[in-house]
Image (cartoon, rainbow, N blue to C red; front, side):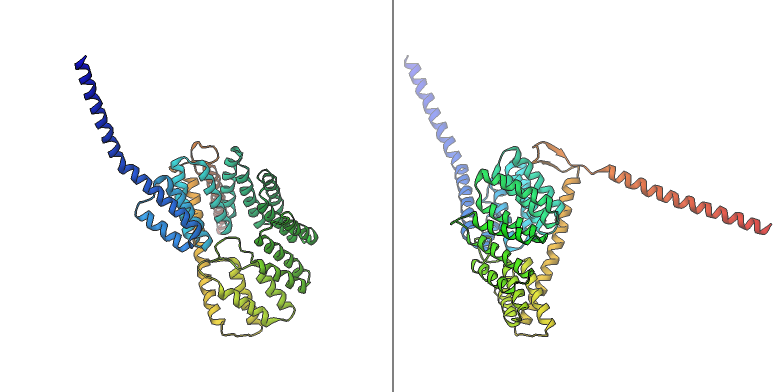
Length: 428
């Protein structure tokens, strides 16, 4: 019995020592995990509170120092893409999204992959690559529908509607907008509904159904009751001003535009680098129509020169174009003309870089679809698939070319034979 107790005590001591060894050997790994988690949490805080430049710099420093875990790297890349997108830096935005999608594929995180595809669709839509945008949106939408994620379904349907609106396919645009509204009812997203009503109004504005458009714009404000966000009021007033402008009601257009500018129309919480409001351009046009040329020029000058020109923005470019079309036609010259001319050169360069980037990223997108060696997790089904080139298309094309060449040489041979026969008859 004494021997048993002695052996038991020795076993307990050995077990205790082993536990201590395991515990202390695990401490560095645990500390490293805690440290990496704290870095990721700090980056999330930086994304919400710091400037985009500071946040991106913090991310780059953390990536270079290898203080972000692999499971968090995709989320960090996604946040970086958001900041780059807001700044108008589509080059780094697309690169960050491709990096994030590759990580989510490896982690088999289909929900985040679907969100990334939706974001890529937004970038392609913004750059005018609508076919690629629709492909990404559809793939994202299929996953969210399978999982009954109504909020995400509404988000992607909204983006699809906006894409079809951009290509003037108003029937498909309305189909997806109404589907988005149906899903919004399940999650009570009034803000998104307001945006959709504004866009439905924009569709009818394009179709010259101005009264129907006006009713949608007013509805976008009324559904909020007392909770309408200021930027939504700004967008609605801006759209109403545009109706008055095309109908020749210039004083009303000026009045509604000024109301819109009170609310600024800014869609993001950080106001460092945003596009100019539509209402500013509408106001400048309305003032020009009423003969207030100097005031129109001053509004455009102030709007252009007060903005951060870090990225390319559509309305910013439009405002510069309108400014020079007015000043050139009336042969006006101000002290700010040279400054704005330099900005125009810079914006044109940015536009060319953006177009070059989107063509390159479109190529990457097509390569991903066509390269049979590129395997990735599809958000559609989660099944490992090989995307292959459509060889039937190439085969049909080659057959048609071969047929055309054969016809050409056949006709050429017949002409030679006919010529030989004519010469022979002539000699005889």
